[in-house]
Image (tube, rainbow, N blue to C red; front, side, top):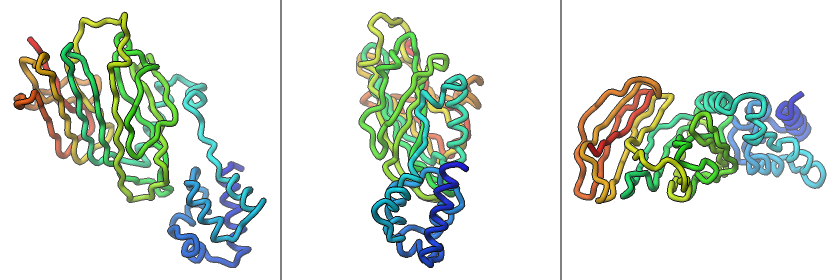
Length: 291
């Protein structure tokens, strides 16, 4: 029997021993009846500790009984190294993201990029508005970000200035030219809830001192595996790196051909913006050229 099923059976026995219905336990604990049903069905594999504490309080558990109840729900989440041990990291991460798309969906994404005087990315900021679709809710998230491994040291490439998410693990996928991140949301978001995440990448500390430096960055793209409501891409160029041409692009897939959506003009302070609404699955964003 799995840990989640054993914990579910224990909860059901304790509730019945207390003479409570699922609805009565929900009212006492302050969680929803749906949450209690999900816990007892084994659907909540990783309930948030606050939920477990509230249910234990409602059941009147203390001492060893309380400790055993809490321990039965402890996370058995694998680290990324453990998760990738049995197969290639790229394949394992794709499977993880595929499962995640059944639990959450991006509604709105705002991506901003600063291009430095040497024509390379400086800071990149991502802001995501996400809706929970899984009945058991979510309390953690995975994501990936691509980079050129000939230019950027993956180990030094980190997500910083995080809002509403704490990075708990990361793993470099050299064959994909990407880094995978795992984040704790701090609480369980229920089905239908929406929340906003923000994180930032600073390329400067991660650039390889002896790496290939000749090629400049010429695009800011976001890949969406599922449709979204809105995608906003902002690029701000240093005055010493103003491109000759900027245009909005769209691709059906990462490997597919790019379609020029429209030419973009730079604002007074070297700023270009592309807005897609609604957003079909695929790759969307901005490209530029100094020629």
